[in-house]
Length: 476
Ligand SMILES: Nc1nc2c(ncn2[C@@H]2O[C@H](COP(=O)(O)OP(=O)(O)OP(=O)(O)O)[C@@H](O)[C@H]2O)c(=O)[nH]1
Ligand SMILES: [Mg+2]
Image (cartoon, rainbow, N blue to C red; front, side):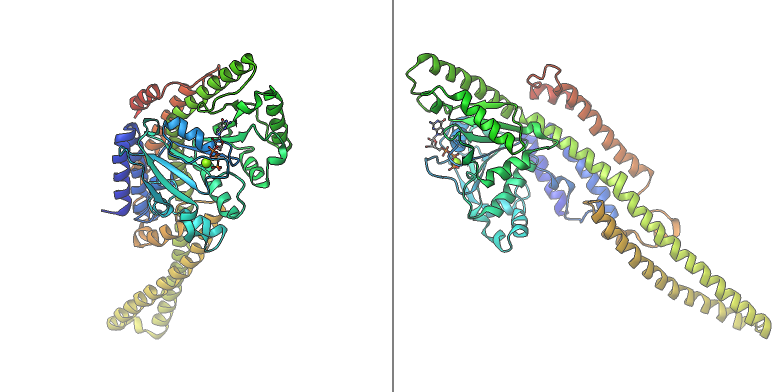
């Protein structure tokens, strides 16, 4: 069994426990893999399913000591992450569910080598950013298991506060990666520091990466520790200060969630202020938790979207470009073969007729045999020359079009006698095209139905995951 098949099987096993509905979606990726493997567009060990994070991923980013870890601990109902006044976390912690009550901590390398986790081969990305730093993966990442019910079917990422400049580039690279793959990103600010000066360049970077994104609704901006505004009743000013500081950097935050840790005792002389802050905290905390729970629906949406994009990339972009190159190679080789054949036959006939040798059957037979041998050798030469030319242009096209499928490898595999004789790629026919079309139709219907379920004219809370599951089960 190929490595890619083992991967999808493991994935299906994992999904069967976590969200059975997605098992069918994983099967669609396997169908794409089969086509890709057959054509040489995907390495036999690779799978398109590997390129996407399958878990609903929630990440918590923000300033140091903003209360990120305290927030996670509260949500999980366990003191799993250390907290403290000084910068506590110096690495990213991936938290995932385990039925084992004992918390296990594994080093970053465990995440780097396991394709089931969202940091698979992240050391390579770190190396790209800072050469040699990928080896120090354990300094950047760790994995913790926790048996909180609230963590079931999700992965949380707690991050180090944005102030430690020492490992800046690698940290930023990981942050960017996390933002890309997360379904929900909570960005924490700290109400104790209303001064925009607290926003160092690293946070500025974070803000910049969240501007003008197609998926901007996945960001939640949280102003934490609002209990400290109680004494001076300065919540509105603090919110306004943050809003304008962020707006100065081009980020318009229309809504700040304002919370403080339920584990903190609020000291306010004025009972009215206390009640107001608590009510606000409870309302916002409830909404944040609700969005965290609904992230599962978002994940289904994201995966279906990727399924559609991957199928389209294969069918509408990669295969047509490959087909065109193969036809070009075949046609030019054929043209040169024909020209040479005509020239050799013409020359042979001329010599035979002018010398009268054509009357000798022995010489005729030898001439025909020589013709075929010369033709064969020159055919191989022409074919190789045009292969080199079309390989190069394919490699360039692949870069220009940013295609993830390996067109050059596919060209090497498909530029064979079958293609030359029939003008068709072996393994690509109407039946296979229809198979991909079916995947596209299935993904399309599911996405539309999900859209209907999730788009709510009132802009209120999306439907419950169970309802969406029902719809998806109906369609698949
Ligand atoms: N007053 C108040 N203190 C809080 C609140 N949330 C957390 N804290 C305290 O703030 C300090 C920092 O909290 P952490 O949860 O460690 O903050 P963090 O964002 O994880 O910090 P780093 O990991 O260092 O980036 C701790 O002493 C917490 O007890 C809050 O809502 N109000
Ligand atoms: Mg922390």
